[in-house]
Image 1 (cartoon, rainbow, N blue to C red):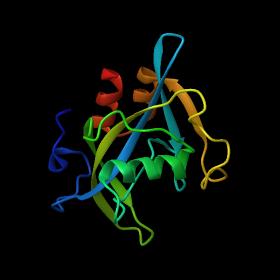
Image 2: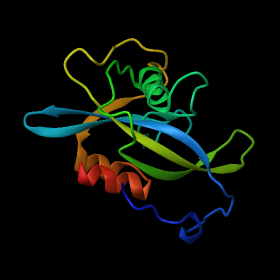
Image 3: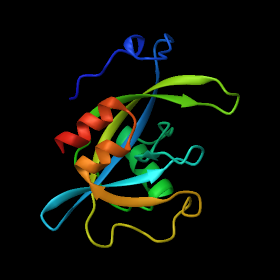
Image 4: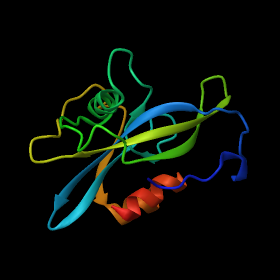
Length: 152
């Protein structure tokens, strides 16, 4: 597990506790002997992120993360493990302009040929890109997620 930076010690930090919880999928593959990560754009800001969302009632956390990976990125694969590979914090901007601190449990999902669909629920709303893990770490904003990607 990656050690998380306290929300109260971050620039612009919110002191609302406890943070809300989401689940996320770290989708990766091996290409030419190196690990690549699938990043997608957020719908609102267009910044690079991993698929993530709220836990879904009736599904386990890992199943919820896999559902988000399908809806947001077209991923049809199984998680590497049923327990999180790490966690990261981020501030989620809501439609009413408020901000909610989030802690996201991150599940690794290995993709192989045929695990990525061209047609999926949010295909027209997001871009997706495969990049080496170290480059992905430079593209995302969340410090703990950067650290996880660098260690991949």
